[in-house]
Length: 390
Ligand SMILES: Cc1cc2nc3c(=O)[nH]c(=O)nc-3n(C[C@H](O)[C@H](O)[C@H](O)COP(=O)(O)O)c2cc1C
Ligand SMILES: C=C(O[C@@H]1CC(C(=O)O)=C[C@@H](OP(=O)(O)O)[C@H]1O)C(=O)O
Image (cartoon, rainbow, N blue to C red):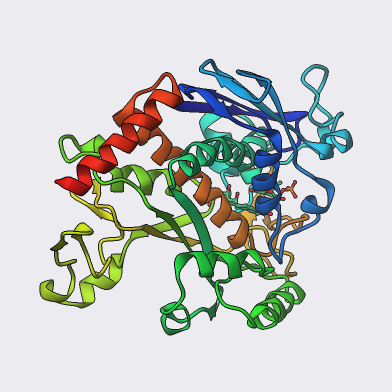
């Protein structure tokens, strides 16, 4: 089964991932991975750290002359910022007392991680809990996108709202997913319509002045996905559940919807489902996609559409900030004002693309074979023919 583990601290020397179960005979390149890493770093409203890092991947195993070997692929991305943290992040030596973090930030893993793993220096927690880790998720996602694109599956995302600024349904209803994606790629806030960037940016600037932060909503989609990935046969094989978990696992994501999601509750059954049609040319088809491409825990051939809600970034710059308590002295304090993003919704959307790519690549390999991509691809082509003639 395709799987990956990643490792690394936010300010440690490097982040790594080992990908296992990726088939042989796939053309991969670090350029393609770097393209995705650069997309994750963009987005108006990010803080000082993104000015320091310029993420690029080194492929350490599993690839020769640009072709995968079917063996574990190791990916590494160095943290440039590490050079500024070598004494604090040292693997050996004595801790530097004055640099310990004893003040847990609300909205972060700090306090709970400290209690759970038995530390007072909360840096031991925040280094790994940080979303810096998502860099490797995007690198792995890029490998998965290479597979998916080779069989015509396209994954993309765009931002629907940041704080109270939002894109209305009517503004995008006549745009194809490709058009929405193209617009988002040309937008500094990754929104799917042109001409609204300034409005969003001014709002983010205003919140920055106030020392505030923002969350938002983004949509991720996958097009041309074959029918029948996932299964209704067991709870943990239902693909809607698997996708929700994968996207919910991204830091600061607090809600996931598939298709019309919560909106379905405001309508009646007759208006909530996607009627089935058949024609000689197309076979079975739908005119609507309220289910977001998933029925009975399986893909139904329509675009997979997932929406996710990101909470506002917890670290704030405002004077009167969130209250917290020092873990040693038990004195109250106003939470730390550190370097931080104001919003990272555009970046989170790119991470979510990667998680969806990983889940779909894993399902494809599960259904069509695991070893040699040339064989697997052939089986997928045959299956697509079968589905057309069903
Ligand atoms: C791409 C990205 C960037 C983030 N940047 C920051 C940041 O600069 N400052 C911050 O306080 N939280 C940031 N977060 C959010 C925290 O990582 C997250 O809230 C924290 O780890 C707690 O996890 P939870 O919100 O899932 O409970 C970011 C999240 C993502 C996905
Ligand atoms: C480093 C990244 O995001 C970081 C995620 C993050 C957090 O607490 O999650 C906090 C900030 O890091 P730092 O404390 O070093 O300024 C963000 O910049 C990244 O996305 O590559």
